[in-house]
Image (tube, each protein chain N blue to C red):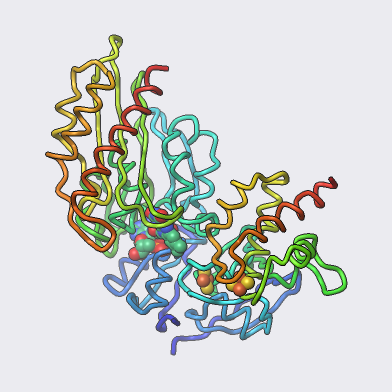
Amino acid sequence: MSKKVDIKVTVNGKLYERSVEPRMLLSDFIRHELGLTGTHTGCEHGVCGTCTVWFDGEPVRSCLMFAVQADGHEVHTVESLGTPDNLHPLQQAFMEKHALQCGFCTPGMLMTFAHFIQRHPNPTDEEIREAMAGNLCRCTGYENIVEAVKLAAQRMAGK
Amino acid sequence: MKPAAFEYYAPVSVEEALDLLDQLGYDGKILAGGQSLIPAMNFRMAQPHALVDLNRVKELFYIKSAPDGSLLIGAMTRDVTVEFDKMVAERLPVVTETMPLVGYYQNRTRGTYGGNLAHADPTGQLPTISVALGARAHIRSKTGERWVEMDDFYLGPFTTILEPQEMLVEVAYPALPPRSAASFKEFTRQVGATPMVGVAVLVTLDDKNRFKNAKIAYLGVGEKPYAATECVKVLLGQEATAEAIRAAAETAAQKDVDPGTDIHGTADYRRNLVNVLTRKALTQAVQSAKK
Ligand SMILES: Cc1cc2nc3c(=O)[nH]c(=O)nc-3n(C[C@H](O)[C@H](O)[C@H](O)COP(=O)(O)OP(=O)(O)OC[C@H]3O[C@@H](n4cnc5c(N)ncnc54)[C@H](O)[C@@H]3O)c2cc1C
Ligand code: FES
Ligand code: FES
């Protein structure tokens, strides 16, 4: 075991101080150290996208970062999007359009598309499909996810 | 799927990082965007003794113009920064157009330009484009520095001329002469996945629309970016017609490349891809060069 390192990370607006081994992945830090199990892990090599979180405001694979690298930085996980009583428009649209079945891919899809809608407030189907290439879903067949993203973008644009 | 233990260093300057690399020698490994290294560590295919993380070395994040007109990209510049940079779009549109093909957005927010080049993936788009564009690598170590043509930078799959104590600090793209344009074409079964074959071309036309200069480089037909020579001979001095382009593409497929067969495709299939992609890339580059 190598020496532990003290880190301070702001996750969903709250400052956490922890002592971690350098080899601890950011995804494991979020899940095991902070107990924020909304962030899922699947492939742990950057392909499936379910571990997607925002690091300093940009979506990244949390399985391809070490927790020590987040020292002094800001992370947002799916828990920051909405609450059961007050869903994010994207979460609401996923529910209405049946854009999830088992829900395994959902946190990554939400974090990917919540950011995508900021960059593309009025997305085409093509743009949505292109953006979805980095997130795998083994249940839905993707069609309903495209519908949900479109609906959420419309509502967020106030249309 | 958890990495083995390692010592972790997070230098804040190039100087400090080079000191560390010098002390660590073969035990040290640079961590850039981690989009290739960390998967390998998670699989325990890589078990570096110590990581020298460059993510806090601010001086390696930049895109700028040099006095001689070349474009300089600092090694730690994120892929997304390059993708959306105006100067890159103006001067190297081929890079801007190709960036979306390098993995996915969520990889490019972390992945770095220098890390991609240093990783030397034989199916990497950026190494092949850099070879075609005649780019040069700026390499530093504690004891010195050198400039190396990207053509000479690659030795084989995932292998470059970099010594363990060396760092790629910057890549320089020379200014293109007038009436020049580049293009990149690849074939892949799935967006963001490893391309089977890709080609990067750079052409310069004279005032009579004849090929004055051409550079053509491939990925997926060998163990490293491969700069073709026979097809270039066919082009030089010829008028840039569809016929000349077709002849060059044929030559590339028949004489220049010697692809292998694997589960993804046969050698013949790859030859055919070389032919088709070379034709498309040259056609596009010629069109842009005429403008
Ligand atoms: C799902 C997925 C899809 C991908 N698809 C593609 C693709 O289509 N095309 C493609 O080209 N890449 C692809 N990649 C790889 C990605 O682009 C990586 O970002 C890139 O190959 C490595 O860059 P990095 O900054 O992440 O480097 P790291 O992973 O941090 O490092 C890679 C290697 O380079 C060395 N290194 C890094 N920086 C330097 C330096 N400055 N000097 C010396 N050595 C250095 C490291 O020690 C290591 O050996 C993909 C990755 C993932 C996870
Ligand atoms: S768990 Fe991170 S991309 Fe699959
Ligand atoms: S809902 Fe099951 S993987 Fe997407």
